[in-house]
Image 1 (cartoon, one colour):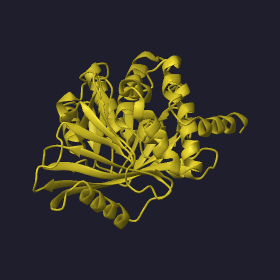
Image 2: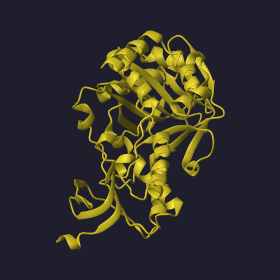
Image 3: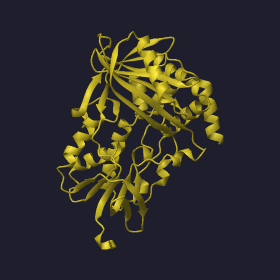
Image 4: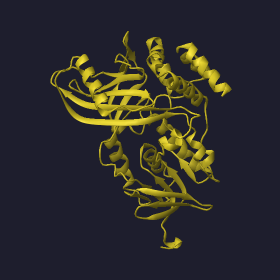
Length: 387
């Protein structure tokens, strides 16, 4: 096949995870890209329910139709106290991965200018006038490429920025008795044994007899599968659940790092999603950050006539805040429970969520930060300044 026979597209998306699908969906909604050819490449056909996304929001978004459950109340707990958080004006929302995929791909399938191929990407090579993309079956070129295939070696083969993992296992359980409070999500329950780490339980009830019960850690190293499952069993027994059926299981690991993935962006290649640093480094939350950044990207593509993708990223002060917290958790992982507990014990939930959404002003930033233990953050600040 010579170069003239290689199919060419205006845009290629390598990987069709959350960031890619959000971006393409919003490109369709904008009606500004109907004259652009778009190719989506992924080795995964997106036909199974492989994950659950949760996020908080004040107003309905374009994703409202795929939200399977909303909560207005959340429980925060540790070994010493429990607090019921009134989340209003926010709601805490749950979206099943398969519902999201089906929703977006239904719209994509109706667009004559957009192609999805279930192929594994093997090669990306940027040239002066275009980008070359190879798969195990084909070759393509494009004007601009958006990559969401995460290469963990970029972050893990350096020591300037800490790299932790938000790693978890969740069981969707069905109980015989009505034991779950359908109106309240367990946001973080640090009453579980910490074992020198930051460990908590997370419970999403979808009925009085059904819930996702998830064991989560913010730490450097993963556990054996049996360790996650044993802790879930202990927790279920602790909250009075003896008899239950496991309907589904999910397991995952999300990188938590301030490593500047965007430095790998070029004029024609933009890393997006986790591969582009779109995951909120201090919490591992992905959905809301990707929602915001995908909207900005679609606007950027419409407005930047000279289109240099390297200029898309903008660093904010929230990146620095995340850096301080990750530095603390990297050096003293056991402090996670006390840090998050200090935030939620007396803090205003609305202000905390606004802060985590990176929408606060400087005065509000300090209102949140001053709730945290002072000494670890002062020490982290000095390390960051003098590094």
